[in-house]
Every structure is written in C-alpha cells, then in structure tokens.
Length: 587
Image 1 (cartoon, rainbow, N blue to C red):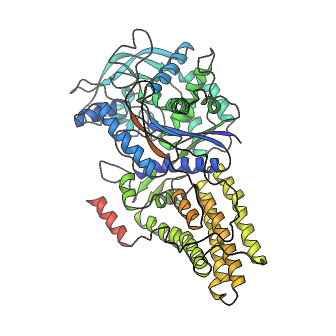
Image 2: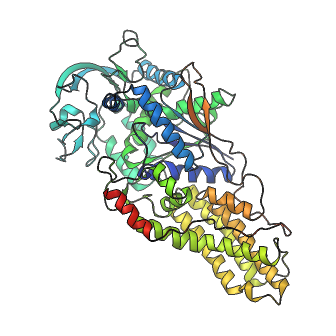
Image 3: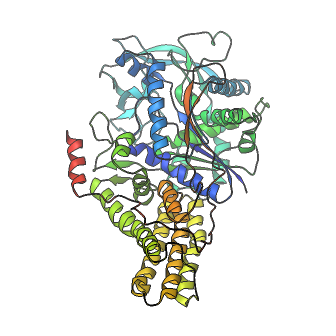
C-alpha cells in the first residue's frame, strides 16, 4: 500500500461549471482515485472552490452584491453539482477559510524568509472609467513575442509565454474595451528564475508524463521571469508582512493562493478528522505520490510555479511546516469543445453540469468523458455522439448483458444457480474476465483511462458473445447446463461490474444490488455543512467514508443468492433529444 494524493484543480467560483470543466479536472481525478482506493492505496483527494481575485470583485459589483455573497452562492452550486457527479473527494472545501488564509500566509512568509520573494516597482493597469485595478486576464492585446492578437495580460495562449499587461501591444480591457492606464505600484514577485536549474533537474526525473505536459513545461523554463504575487485589490488574502498586513488596497494574487489550496485543504482535512498532523503522510513521506489533475490551460501553475513554491519554501532555511513533496505527475487533459465550438457562457455554447444532470444520468456523462473525452487531444462533444455512445455501448452493450443474464436467472431459478461441471468455454471466459483486473488496472494506474474503459468494454463484449453462443434460453430441457451457463455469466457480470466501478459508480452500486449484494459497493461523497475551524462562517463541503466498498479483485458469487427481476440500469435516449438539445443551444 502507498499513500496517494489526488490534487484536483480548483473550479473558480464566479458561476456554475460546465461539462467542459469537469472533463478536465473532475471525472478523470475521480476515476483514478476510486481505482487506487479499490487497489488498496491510501488516497487523499482534495480540492475546493477558488474564490479570490479581481474577476470575482468585478462580477460582484456588476450584480450589486459583495464578493463574499457571490462566492457563497456559487460555492454551494458547485458543491452540489460535483456531488451529483459522484466525485469522491476526501475534502472539497474553499479558499475563503481561516485555515487557508493561515497556510497561504505561512508559505508566503517562508518564501520571503528564504529570499525568493522580492519587491519591485512595476506598472499596474487601471480602468480609466472606474479607477480600479484591471486583472491581468481581463486585458487583451497583441503578443509581443508571437504576434497573436488575443493574448492575455498574464499569458499568451498561442505561444505559452508569461506576460505582463504593459508588454501587450494595443492593450484593451475585456470588460468595456477601453485602453487601460498604467501607473507605478510596488508589488512582491516570486523569483522564478532562481528555480530554473532545480526545475530542469526535477523534470529530467519525470517518467510516463503525457508528452504535451513535459514539452510545454520545459519550454516555459527556458524563459522564466519573476512573477508578481500581489495585486492592487481589496478581495484576497492579506500580505503577512509588517506595514503590509493591514493595507486594504494590497492582497496576495489569486493564482498564488489557489495552488496552495492543495496543501491547505489537506491540512483542513486532517484537522477535521481528528489528527491535525495526518496531512504530513501525503506531503512529507518520500514514498507518497502526488498526482495533479487539470485542463491544459493550468499546466504552467502546476509544473513550474507550484513546484517553485514548494522548493522555495522547503529551503534553504527550514520553515515551520517542513520540507514538502514535489508532484509525482501533472495529469493534464486537453480541451472539450461542443458541437464544433469552444465553450462560451456568453455565447450560450454551453451546458452546465446541473442542467445536464437534470436530464441525464451522471454515469452517462462520466462514460462519455472516459471513453471519448479530451485525455490527450482536443475532443468535440456532440449530442448525436453522446446519444450513440449511451444507446449502443451503455444500454445495448453493458446494460443489456446485465438485464438479460439476471432476468433469465431470476425467471428460471429465482436465485443465482449453482454451477455444475464447467466446459473449456466456461473456463476461458472466466479467465479472460479475471485477466482484466491486471490489464485495466495497469492502464488506470498510468492515467490511460480511455484505453482502460475500452479494454473493460471489450471484455463485456466477450461476455456478451459467450452468452449468445451458449444460448441458455435453449437449454430448458437441460436445467443443469442452463444453471452452469447462467452462473458463469453472472460471475462474469459481477467481475465486469468491478472493472467498470471507477467509471460508473452509480450503476455499479445498482448492479451490485441486482445481483443480491448488500452494503456499499461504490461509496459516494456526502455534502456536510461545517463550521469554519477558525471562527469564520459555515459552509458546505464534500467528504465521505471511502474505506468501504469493493476491492480491485474478483469475488466469487454465491449460489442460492435470491434474485429479483431487474429493471434497466441505463436509459435509452430517444432520437429527439439531439434536436431538442441543439434547439436549446440556439435559443
């Protein structure tokens, strides 16, 4: 057994999340975490809502509410949506907790003490019409390096280089199109160039990373620049230095405090579970592994900036939290588009998780993301392909096998029948299914989820072929042989259900019960209302008991277990849903 940290990107709390978001950070991290727990590893899966920064303040002003009121609203929406998807967080929290503030300030102070935070006078962007600071991401212009005309004030998405807003050619505000004014202001910067050699040496040791992540990270290190970690704004974590901590106009910038959330969430989890030092087992044990899940637009923060923060805090002077582990792997997904277009709430090219779950099963979305999602390439979500995958693979492939095998056994025996003498075909099928625990498990452990679920469904296809070839419905005159075939088929269904549990946990629990099982097969997260540990406001979190549930191993079914006539596990989708959903997009 090893300890595994699943560090999941923090969704920004300025609105509900859409299915493109959860295809990058949500479902892949949960599939991995569920598998690793089933395989016997001690998993800590943490994240929360990212709630600071000027974009929150800008939106709150536009809606006539306070930033806290805005993030309270969307924190709850996001918690409920991720709960609906069955994402098994050990703790899904938020960045507006007293615990988070303390951990962020501790890391800031440690970096400062170690000489990796430097003060500089720079040019800040101000909105001429409001007098307020414009966040870097709200400024667009032409990249001075590659000429891309929609570069952001913090980064060019075309060439990947870090930028400052004043470097842009013809900068403009994304809020109202006006040209920002640039004024001198003093800020603190993370001295990223100081870590270049250590980062390169660390990346040289990384094996098995997705090629796009490793290549992109190496390219960034070639031209590292100090990066501002404070901003002129009112909403965020105060700067923990004398003459700065009480200033209302200076705050730690959101990108810096958000990545520290992985650590602060781990510490909060430990405090909430009664052992305040337990987090150290995932962050300081050299044998512990840490996997970070996000979309490709967040690679730089996790493969360059966060490792730099960890390296800088850990040395040269020892700090109070001690040395902290670097990531084992940065697991980045590509983009999911929708009907050939980039997701855009403003252009209504979007379907929010909540709206999706009101009309379709969570496992139908989880399945599509796993089998056809943007694991290593940009992928397009279309309603026609979603319907096809659901009907042809989930319903006709897996669901139909479950239904007809249990139905025939219930009708003819009322229970799981005993197996008589097995044939070579029976033994070959059982061996093929059990081999799947190694083949599917190896793929899941290497973050090849698309290949893993394809392999699992191939095995389901083998069971379907066996069932059709053996044709137990033709064996009414030979009940002993019929019973043996059905026993073998149900054993295969039981094991296939385990292979598919990380992907389809809701269906897996139901199939477990249809096979006469009791108790928890696939544990689910719970929404818990908690008090802030440091005398702040209460808020909802996701937590759960994941010590229960099935293991990643075959389990023999028991003859004599009572069976009832099953109802379908998956819903077939009518052809009209494609037209209806496309009409919603155009309305």
